[in-house]
Length: 184
Ligand code: SF4
Image 1 (cartoon, helix red, strand yellow):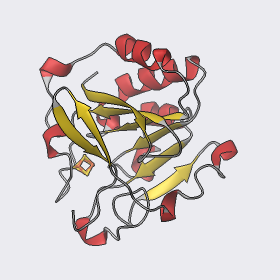
Image 2 (tube, rainbow, N blue to C red):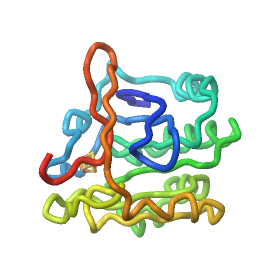
Image 3 (tube, rainbow, N blue to C red):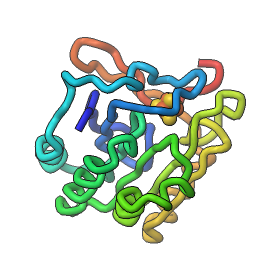
């Protein structure tokens, strides 16, 4: 699976302390995307899903997993494998950000199975004109779906949350993590 980075604990992309995975590859090419470096697949960063699962299983005390990108559904077969591994590790709070809209995904067999195994999804392309600087989605067209009803309370703050940034030193580079405001 093409993966750029895995960082933990991320507090700015979902509720609580989250292990966050950034996948590589995205067909949407949204204007003013904050991660254009993740559009093209990087064959140097092809990692077996089992290795990613090992990293996730080693983490202690996390509240959930966020998978973003890139577009995680661009590698849907690998994403399904990863989601199943995470569930096997006993973690069911899985949040995925995608540029596809839910209705498109719901027509696809693999995507449907992924959706059946995650707690929440943020869908739709980023539209910079609709970035209202509110909530943990990039623009107001993007919708939060909560599939696991046990998490409705936990995610309630999500759409009106104050955005924050977290800086990490990752492989010698400073990486700023969080939903960017329009002015950023
Ligand atoms: S879907 Fe996300 S990663 Fe892909 S172009 Fe749009 S904003 Fe960027």
